[in-house]
Image 1 (cartoon, helix red, strand yellow):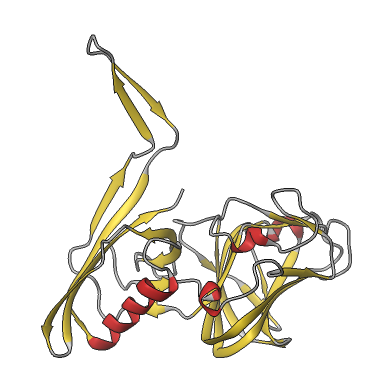
Image 2 (cartoon, rainbow, N blue to C red):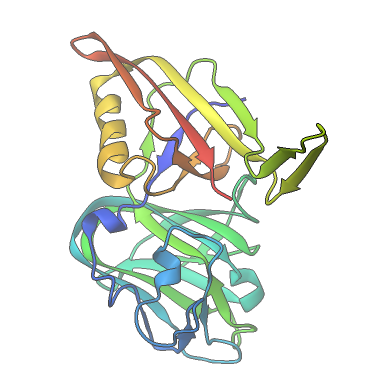
Length: 286
């Protein structure tokens, strides 16, 4: 059952940074998915959770930092998501800082998107992850700044493996004030291609399996919610250009899906001076 919906969109591209330099890895060597060992650590900021940055931490004692030096401030940042990581296997604890000032937090972990999270242990502003997978870090204080760092430290003795990370996002979460009305869940198999021979025989090729989609509708939203949603759609994700994470409120702890808005699916109809009927469709990323 879908409940209270919260969007976790990536504000890093909106704030802006030099793609030829950022994000950077400090204090340790690394390798990007394309084999590069210098230059930007693009894998954690390419909107592809399956491409991995590998940091040379195995049996090391140095503590690497993934650094985002932004062109402008990100305002009121209250969450970070680190996806497709191996922090538990590598023996890692992780923290979020702005200009080297650590921030208190709570955190939730799951083995991946679409899996219900469980609360993590947080000690001295550092998260100790119980599983490899996805981490949702909620900052206790909404923070504004342009120098954001993900600090990685060994949890005890030396690291037990190279650290790998698929994606890092930071931003300001948006929770709708009301639960959507009669949400519609759609399962699509658009990775399946069927062909028909001249004799009428069908053959099928599957490149991937099911891709979930949802239509979410609100018969009424007030101006503040409508404006926040429009900002995310028009400025942060730029329609379907960038994916984002969403919690559909199905469980008592977050259950994050990695999705995009479906093309041209946002519909807003004005009801009164301050009230709107709103709907949109989202589709999960493979």
